[in-house]
Length: 278
Image 1 (cartoon, one colour):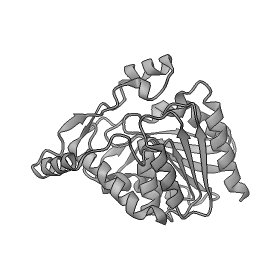
Image 2 (cartoon, one colour):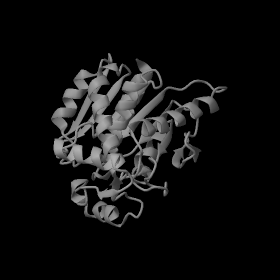
Image 3 (cartoon, one colour):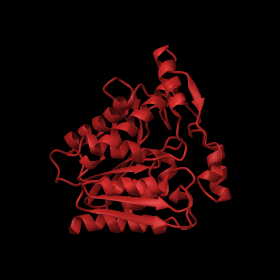
């Protein structure tokens, strides 16, 4: 656990490599998920020599206070920056290791926004089926209503997340049942969180060209949650000298829940290892 600058206690899961670390992966999850969805891939990254910190977003996963709420997008960015700052301070006497920020699903929007806002804080960016652009978009009228509700003092009021069908995430019946029964999965978010989400989208649209670290994007071909075409276009706007796109035509949204997840894990590891050689 670490403490955010406003005193909020934030939990995370940590995997350590057996030997010297080849790099440090700091990961952020989707709007509904949490770090517990990604145990397989995180363990495999650690077995391959990478240290993994998977953060649970405030109000999500193991963080029980103010479920589904975040005051604004700067608060979400500050939570990530606080962790990275503390991590760098704690490791100041150790041999430096590259820091890879990994954003999964909606967390891809947060990770990319962070990389665009603080480009010198990280060494590489991994975007796994990222929610840079969602298929579910608010109308201007709905955005106005959010602003009005927040201004009227209803920022903590929550609404259901419109992703209540586990089949959106995976074809696997076993994983669908896992999602359905998952008590830590988030079901509702606050008005202020929805506004923070919009502001992250605006921030990324304005600043994405500021991302200059090596970036890899993985897309699921049968994704009904994110807009793959818009994501490809965003990847082209990143100014990094090295950008890579890997697609899985038959996969559903959550690659972790595919019948052969080792395929995408191996691709991520191959990309990570290529950074050390470049």
